[in-house]
Image (cartoon, rainbow, N blue to C red; front, top):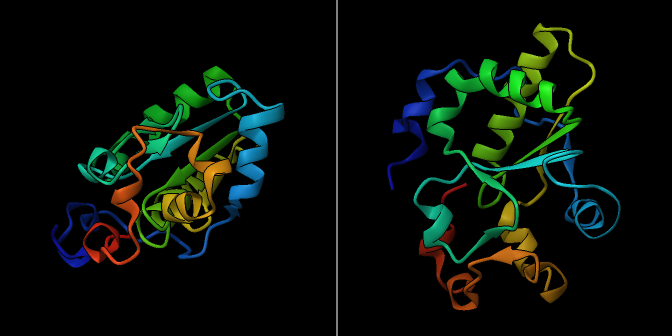
Length: 161
């Protein structure tokens, strides 16, 4: 995988913050298991590209939108989310320290520019890696989960943020 500095999404403006608001895996798990309906109350976006399927699973109900496609699609996504009544958008990648934070910040900036206070943009704290390492209570909410793909000794799958 190309280093972050050579990624195509780096042609887009830097977001106003590198530390956007986050949601904990505990809170997102509560939403998934109890009170909120994905696609109605919130949407979860997986920003990984080929690592979406190559890295051992993804959050059930998440939409795969590689970050390289995100910035030009912000107006369309905003319209879709607004028309659907979505109140919260959760973005994640492997650790949500790179792509996850960038996407949450970009969409947060977009919302501020439009004075849209009805939609919240959050990064999943610690990304899918944090979700997976939290145990079976979490992994049971993954599709295409492959436990061996998350071996902590295998840094190949977890170097991209």
